[in-house]
Image 1: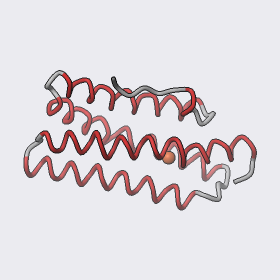
Image 2: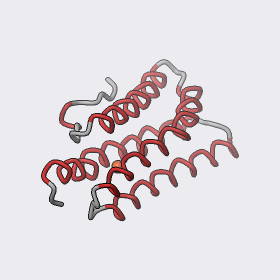
Image 3: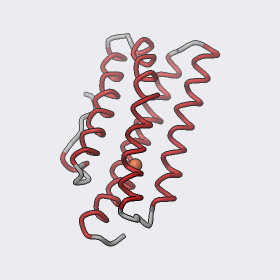
Image 4: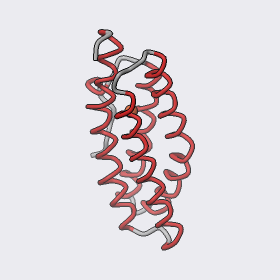
Amino acid sequence: MGIQWRESLSIGVEAIDNQHKELLHRFDTLLNACQAGQGIEELKRLQTFLDEYIHTHFNDEEALQRHHNYPGYQAHHAEHLYFIDQINKLKRETQQEGVSTHHVVETNNMLLKWLLNHISKVDMQLGAFLKSGTP
Ligand SMILES: [Fe+2]
């Protein structure tokens, strides 16, 4: 069980693929921690990690898009903002209520699902554009 990066998720840009690998690895660590009954502690670690890493990652992706005048930039940027918003919302909740199993489940279900969907569709479109030079 668990979540692993696979070749079919490659968008063809090594630096971005490596960041995706790291992100998925961190989510996998959370899944494993859940199985070991340590999901709550691991969620706190994941939140701290995402705070910095997700901004670096999204900034790198967006800088690449601006550099290549990517026509889908605005829509892609909006997706990133949505994810950051969800992370911040979850973080606020855990700060106010304390981390509970419900937050761990929500992170697994919602954030991981979003991330996989985003990489396999939206980031993949970016990869195709960078390869072919057309949207
Ligand atoms: Fe993206």
